[in-house]
Image (cartoon, rainbow, N blue to C red; front, side, top):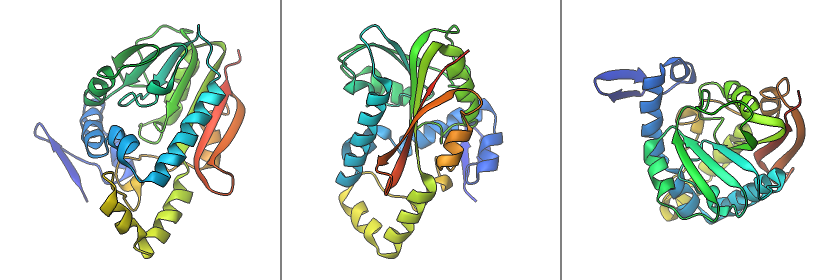
Length: 249
């Protein structure tokens, strides 16, 4: 069993139960270590080209569902290094993340829209209720202690009829594909040419929750009205699940 050590503290990071139960300070330290090990900036820039294609399709799906207007005030919960904010050309965007290292990368970028960055937990943000027109999470909910708490916070922060969109990895499908790749040694070949390395199962590392379609729907169905569900790149090869929801009083 792997144990993470920092500032004299020792706590488990190898199984979901212990990772979810650690306190906020310990969780932040653990999250910082994972953000360095699995830097999303490297993932977006240097991952295997087929994954880049899927990621581009996923991002385009999120943008289509958000349908941003010039006057929209938007929040990205878990903005990471700001890779997704780079593609926006409308709206005013606030990026929130727990990792100061990733936020520093995000702040160093140039954007086509007004952007602001805040370090905070996604479950308890510093914003007033009904502040935003649209909120989205891009591959974030699998990393947090309580995905449903994030959804409740998004509901609080959204104006009436506001839109909440999120994407999550279809973990069970992905892991079945990774098993096939591992058996065929294809993962080793990809790791030789990609700076971002494959792991056999991300729930052994940074992913605290294993999402599938039912889980994705269950975390929002008693909070929001589910508007649309998309599979990326396709229903036959559903690597990512993208969901858009509407806030109704």
